[in-house]
Amino acid sequence: MHELAITESILSIAEQSALENQGKKVTDIYLVIGQLSSIVDDSVQFYWDHISQGTVCEGATLHFDRRPAVLRCNTCHHQYPLGEILQPCPNCQSVDIYIEEGEELLVHHIDILKEET
Amino acid sequence: MPQRVEIVKRIMDSNDRLAQNNQALLDQHQIYGINLMASPGAGKTSFILETIKRLPANIKLGVIEGDTAPVTIDADKIVAAGMPAVQINTGGDCHLDANMIEMALAELPLEELELIIVENVGNLICPASFQLGTHANVLIASVPEGDDKPYKYPNIYRGLDVLIINKIDLTPYIDFRMDYFTQGVEMLNPGLKTFPVSAKTGEGFDAWIYWLTEKVKAK
Ligand SMILES: Nc1nc2c(ncn2[C@@H]2O[C@H](COP(=O)(O)OP(=O)(O)OP(=O)(O)O)[C@@H](O)[C@H]2O)c(=O)[nH]1
Ligand SMILES: [Mg+2]
Ligand SMILES: [Zn+2]
Image (tube, rainbow over all chains, first blue to last red; front, side):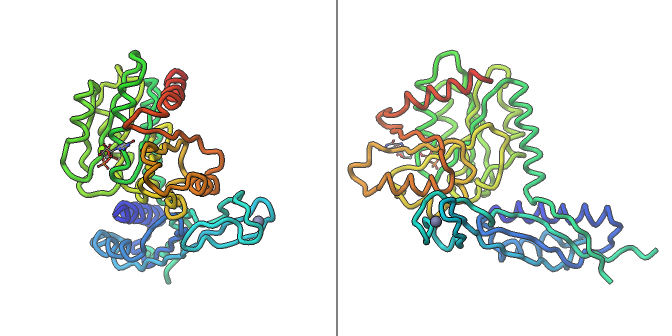
């Protein structure tokens, strides 16, 4: 359900950027979404189709660049994916690990059509 | 031809900016703020009530109660315990955000308060993404929920400043492996400050109240 708030925020970032760049239409929006941000693509798309109507972003395609969570072991420096459930380092069983990637939640770039000049 | 515009902007930015304003308002009134998160029924309201009972008399606490439905049960309990409370009905939303807190703060007597506790909506996923502007993110995990929660809901454990393990009076009846649980927490948030308590028996509250009192005094 927090996807509605997320989607509204995506819309306002894209609208703002279109305005600043004299865009008359936004055609594509590229998002970077880490696994740990717990965002469900389908529901963002669902809200998007509703709330983008009547804005410069109407009809824009959302692109989801999903980044899986990547963990790294502090003991042996082995790198491994988070998977479904958190696990100690599969190489040395250490629990001294850190999250290297997977917490992103960004609007990376957009494609716009400019005003005719 | 469409033209590419680089943005690279955090989607949570606008919420986080409002959260910073909230924190500035709390700081201006020298109020320490806590965002209390947990699953439904973990014991958030019981924990707040027990905290009220044990706080030094000179610390006045205000409570913001978030609920998905227009029920004031939790807020009524706080008021009955003698502290001001504001109810936020999120209208079905699964989390509180900084904007809702801004509105709630306007309804609390900030000049009189030293401490504000926000009881977030019972949920382990959504509240984790929304900073409120409080000084500490606190999670209550309760023993009956099971010892695997950090493994299944890593995100909420990442952003925590304090962890409360509630309902420890029930450990004799439940297969809750404390070492397995804390190992998961340690992987996600090394060295996290943790208080095992029972809001029913009051066990463990002395350490929590001591920690809290120090934080409030430092404001
Ligand atoms: N045995 C035991 N029961 C507890 C403890 N803390 C809370 N409870 C019980 O757990 C139930 C839920 O407690 P609440 O304080 O309402 O939990 P909550 O997290 O505020 O619940 P919601 O606001 O509905 O999400 C109640 O029946 C409490 O009496 C505890 O430490 N031990
Ligand atoms: Mg409650
Ligand atoms: Zn290792």
